[in-house]
Length: 448
Image (cartoon, rainbow, N blue to C red):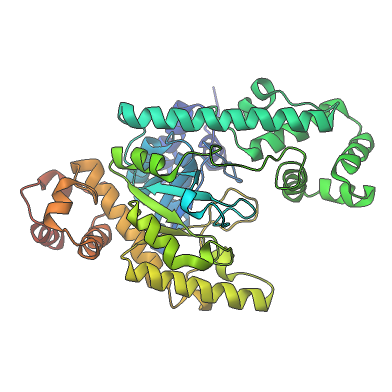
């Protein structure tokens, strides 16, 4: 007779590559612990990568929903590179775990109007990390599916080129994309971080002796042997060193992107709008030549359809150097002021795609007090849109919303109020139809 799985074993199973295993583990965890262990607080991480692109802690969409429940985070959102593979899984899990959830996509695009400026991808003029948030399903319309297919194929081709160049340099440590890299992913969407992990594994096979392996990496990373040996004892730092030395700007695997390396912003917007989701600009820290022109940049992106702004707060304030911290905190305040003026709700989070990133932002930090409410309101906004769009097709971009609430600021406030009032999985939505006005809907929520 098999022994019942412990909570820890079930939580590990939440990250199994088999979706049926993840679902079964969540059902059993909820059976074992039907009540939340802590009351939910106004804590939110709306930008968590899952293992469908890369999560440094190995979290699947289901695992992230469970994490939010167990830690008392009221709101959680996933954002994966180039794919929507986790959308249905995450939103379904959020309904079960009573976490307000949202789902998005992120990719690199090209912005020809800023071809001479570094924007939010340092060292790569014209290249723009850009997002869509508020998706409601993995199963998208054919037009959107074709764009996602193109994103995946372009990513795979870039990966294959990268591996070819790095293999030539690391010989005899050579990674094979099909046998060494793709098995590290649940659905074939590999990133540079998967490739780094693969190279570390291949080196262990080629050089089973730790001393020989350290000597190999010392020579290839151009580091003293003692420093290499020390790095190898700190896996996250070692992985970052390999990625920086071999794959980022100046590395043997790096190729400077051009105008045809990534899709134009407008192509990504076509995908987002076809899904009833929200084009979302992404902010770095305000110190690049492109972001220093924030007024021009956001006028351009809003003109192309952006209706929200993503910020990773930690890299804008939690900085050891006081002088750099002062500059970046001021830039953070300035961009939030601009977002207010342009009626751009904020989507904030820690990413979780690099070791050491926080599970949730510290909204109580002194530096964040002037913008804390904007962060929280933005989280409720995107959940409110998601709930209305997924259940009723009445999200922020719907014909109903644009007819009833033509002014974006007024529309933002409506979906924020929905997000605050509507618990996850609430049956009230079954009683709402497009014939109801926004005020009718809010009144029903207040009386519920």
